[in-house]
Image (cartoon, rainbow, N blue to C red; front, side, top):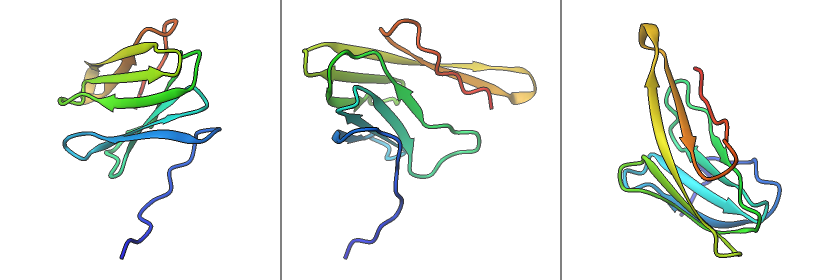
Length: 112
């Protein structure tokens, strides 16, 4: 039988899409709130779930690319957004990452 592993909360409306990355590390959820969220079932140190926004219509689907470095989101108005992951290494092993897409300069930095 199935057992509840984890509850992922954050969307403000119904979830319309869920997609696992090929390596099983991440889950992407799309919602009627026009956003996509990226979750980790087993978060690594410093991981912060991302919220991707910019669509003007409800999300139909969200997909994670095979290398976990690209996201594709599709909305009801037929807009397709492609988001790319960029990793920037800092001093003393600190890392900052951004997932940038077509939205008006999204600020999705993880300064952990």
